[in-house]
Image (cartoon, rainbow, N blue to C red; front, side, top):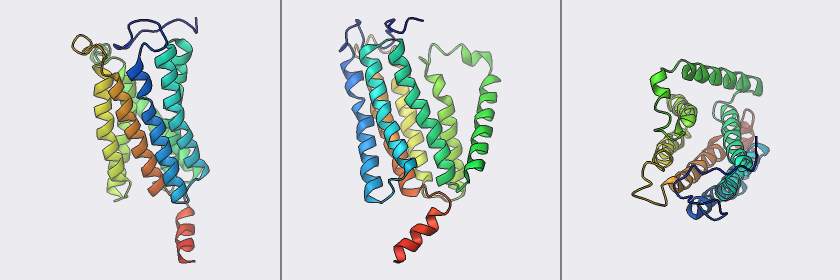
Length: 234
């Protein structure tokens, strides 16, 4: 594989130059803003734990990785774009199982593996007609597991009347809007020469910020809740 092979998959890019995608590049600041909001909230609430710090750093790294991809636009920067996104998803799910459901690490890991296996099996058994629409979806079908995860979290947290449920449902709505911007980027290229992918960045930054607020405000791992109550009485 040629790691420096140019990639041209977005409407805004018309050549291989560094600043060929200015909107797609600069809108990655939304992830940096989300990370800064998360950092401010964690510090102000005295919840800058290791777990929250990791999520905040990953949120910022999503913006950095995506910026690299929309400027260098080659194979290695594509990896730099994708890895932080899915690392954030995996770590967020694990930390949420601890913080929202008060599971121990062994139970959280077991639940995570079962969920991933179930989602993977469902997509493996998906009718071939869905695969034929992959080009129309512009690669957005890869994010279907994230939608499934948000729905599962939303339903189970709502049943528990957990305060984080409203954030998860809001995040789902935001994510669907952001996926629309990503999906129709090439389809609307004739009408909008700069494309719509920049909207994917803006709304995803809003999504990441919403998820960070949810976990920082309402994600309390086993044993921490009692400690917080005790501290508030001192």
